[in-house]
Image (cartoon, rainbow, N blue to C red):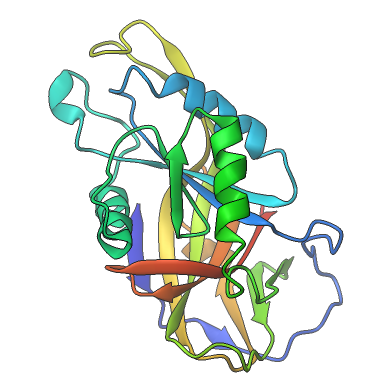
Length: 247
């Protein structure tokens, strides 16, 4: 994954003409981040489940492969140390130091076993008890070779937040030759391949555009947007999220 700010992001007025907009009837109820590893024997059921959850239009479900199990005999071909740092950052903010695979973090605040659908649903319900969770509707569209992201004004936002775009690949199949999953072929879903910080956000209405060519890791065909309290080092509650196909 590449993590960087884009100097070429442009703030513009948003028009609906020619847009591929996230459907209004698919209001996001959760951002679900799966921390997984090709070297983890417990992860394949979670990898399958995130694929199922990715088909739910009310969820922004992404896979973030981590690298700290690479010493077990197989180097994860999709892992990035930024993912591992994000997972550890979540645990520090929560104060529980719970870092494991497969782990799901829901709406930036509650974690659950990534292979347990019921636990994930409970985590969604628990996270929604915070009124800030997904309180800001995010509009995500594609127009003229650009990704267009809009957020409305929100007087309720009193803490700092950041706006991030994640470049995703809908499905990547990997044949694993060594380690705990040796001999297995596993498909990973909505895999994070690149991230771009658009801006800090303090509650004012804004629209950003990102040229699709700047999501330049091979295979990226989807994009997710998160408006998230805190910072990359100390990620907090997800206050807005959306996902869309871009190619």
